[in-house]
Image 1 (cartoon, helix red, strand yellow):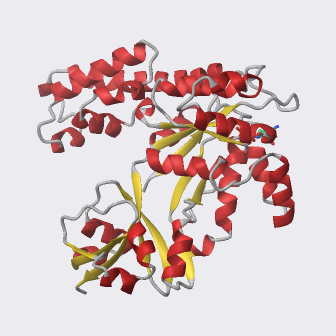
Image 2: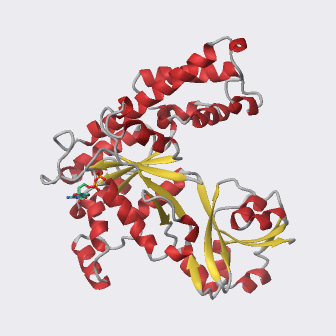
Image 3: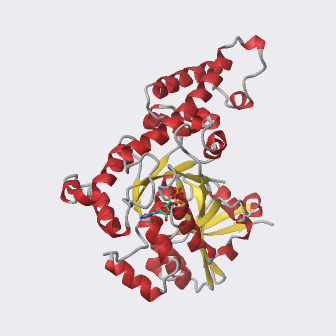
Length: 400
Ligand code: GDP
């Protein structure tokens, strides 16, 4: 199961963000009975407006979105890799995650103490990365030490290497030496991720390197700045000059943008405080409040955008089932074939898989109904080699 860890220095707004993320799902908790885990693990629904349309087409009595798991990882402070704060315990929590949301404080508030004395996104990101890199260096050194011993004097280095086919200890050592060079130069491994071959990546992921995990940067800004900052981040992709226009408001977020650019990582502006305040407001009050902040649609910015960006970063895609009972979104890794996609719903579906009757979401909407889509020949009958595509609406045929 994929998990995303929320990390950042103390007092940047991690817990506020985590709680706001979990809040929206509480109302739907009945749909996720299998997910009550630990207090710091939250199940967060993935917003998807296509589900509303599907529910109309299928006359479904309910909607079930898909979800992601987030882990609130507190305790990361300078010196963590040396055992400061919660030290190693918190590092091992990150090790189990598949991606990292790095919350960076970009709001000014004299009442909220900053651990380094002043708000400085670049310095904060470097502090966190330094701890992660130090932990990685220790891990790599330990592993290299074992690999360098003559193989007669020890048993197979690990079960992992034995199952990896052509992957030899020699190859692993070469890859790890490159990793060590990168880390010793003060660079997180993820910045050079594209330079590692698939096999090397797998080995490095298996090893649990913290700086090999993909990062999504969440710039936590004041509620009054959310609209401007979000627009700037979007417009900057085509017009870098935009940063100058709103320099007074966006200077701190610009530091995050520049940092993230080095590794082509996404940056999402959030306002943890705003999101946590909205929870207690009536719909009318909400609307008024958002309007006063110049926000027309909170569904595509802030937390929702963060969840979508995480979903993308994890390499996931969504397919749907649609019927009178429910319209439902399901998550699969990109490239998943039909039988394995069926297995996400139920293992019997995978075992007895026969065909997947499939229609693209856009085609179904165009046809207006499933029967209409059938008449127009838009519903395909796909076999076991079919790679399920983003937005496919699927009916699985299977033997019981
Ligand atoms: P954590 O230590 O990173 O988990 O930080 P918390 O979520 O506990 O937040 C620390 C303090 O900062 C709390 O008092 C929050 O209310 C406050 N805080 C969090 N986000 C914001 C924000 O966007 N603006 C302001 N002004 N305060 C915030």
